[in-house]
Image 1 (cartoon, rainbow, N blue to C red):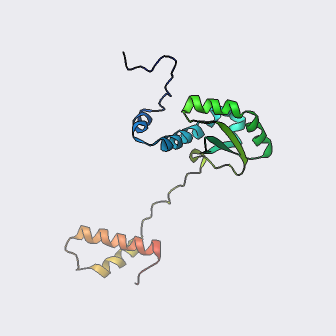
Image 2 (image 1 turned 120 degrees about the horizontal axis):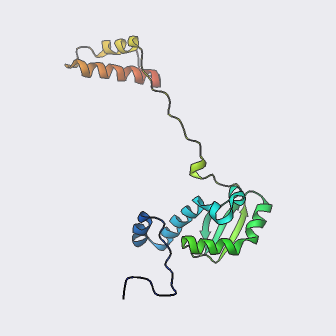
Image 3 (image 1 turned 60 degrees about the vertical axis):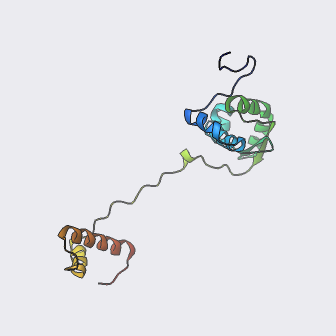
Length: 166
């Protein structure tokens, strides 16, 4: 007999090679959490574009998928589609669900929707600041390149954190 599953039994498809590897080593609860994260990421495929903008799955409690909804109308729509949503989650993500429970609350933003923080522009101390710092350590370090680098670091630190004495 080959390594294929029994006829009539479908295996939940692995979401990725990493998911296949992790599936063998994680507990069932951990796999449900990973699958829930992937379901949340692909929520639009389950409920459609309009409803996905106004709702998001947030947890699985006692085999019930809890869906955050932005208004009572959205919660009602999720309630009306609960059987379809549960079936898609079972088949597509292998999450063992018995139902769906909408909850009116603030919808958590997906990580993709979070604004990306831009790093501050690079800081370069002025030559006067570097020379002032170099005067403090002059003669204490034998190598000129190390002394210059340390003086530049000291000047940067002083400007950035406002510490140190002149």
